[in-house]
Image 1 (cartoon, chains in turn cyan, brown):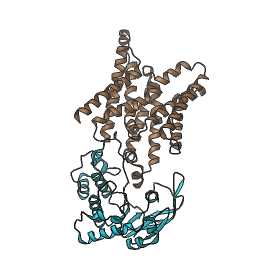
Image 2 (tube, each protein chain N blue to C red):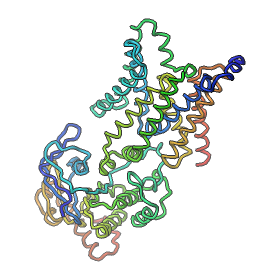
Image 3 (cartoon, rainbow over the protein chains, first blue to last red):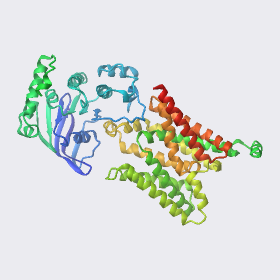
Image 4 (spheres, chains in turn green, red):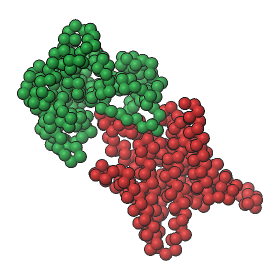
Length: 244
Length: 274
């Protein structure tokens, strides 16, 4: 089932055209990854999809009643705003205590309900964000650089959570990330952006495409292979980053 | 002083200027509490000042056209707030833009008033407020305004909080951050309009910011902070009024002094508990 489709989408930010003529779509159940260098329009496309940016040209068509669980790139909580984790989970939609406890447990942070949001570590914070997204039982989960600030084992663990969530909820997942190799290996489809969609397809197709290599070189290919190796055997390689 | 008290005991309660002043202070504090929380959470402190300063221009225009002051204030405060919103994010840093607009509005208001003969005395009242001169009509306006502001913010509370946290997060749930900003803008204009006569343009900003800042160390959730802010604001108003009566000091500034003292007290308390 098609959840969201863009047709000829052109987006401007601060008067500058960041993305041109994007045709893309996301289907239920698939994991799509956006890759691209800094300033290539990844976050801009996400803003377009969630409706925070109005298209200059083109359209964004979302399924009727599409529920989006969005985990933003960062969330600077003002020091003057007191906010417990449980209160945060109830924004903007209220949930009962049991549902919140389940979501926190599923995200791997069962004991943080009464903690203040500002006291959370980077990893705890991302998990709470994930719990909030889960509570909305989204059709589409959007993660914008969600593993920013997590170390490599933390990030790998986070992606395993996402994979679990996708199976559990049968939702689609759209990820934006710099951890090219990790993210791409977990994806069904990769969209490589650089002001426009410069290539797309399965991770294998994209990483072999000349456009992708022109942007990222062939250096990441080695790391990509290593990750898959780890993935196949499912045990820890604490030397993996040395190869990257 | 004794004579005043003796004579007023024979009248109904609202005839006592002290009771009226107290009720005006409490009403203003109640409206300012939830709104002030958003002002500090969203770092809009200058925004409150700019709106309040613009209100003075509204006073001048009302005097010139002999219209109702509150309407003039409401209109200019609203125009100012919308102007700020429209101009923000277009080059100038937000605080610079607000500084330019706030001071320009205040200056234009002062110049405009000078064209109207006999307005000089009135103006002082609108700059510093004269809570002791509040009449029953003013009181009715303050309380209906305050209740309207509280109702508006209560209705939009969840949306406002989400938009305050992160505009994109709000948008992904179908909440328009700009629409919620407009809600706050309207609430701010309304608060300034009803409070200007009692509190004055220069002190409204203080009433919006000091009580929430004082409440912060005592609160664990946004709702608790808004409630504690209301208590601190109302306490400041009543205690400030009493102190100004006792020590024969200007009322508005005395209220702000009490609020500032409470801020110091809760800050120390917060440190001790941490």
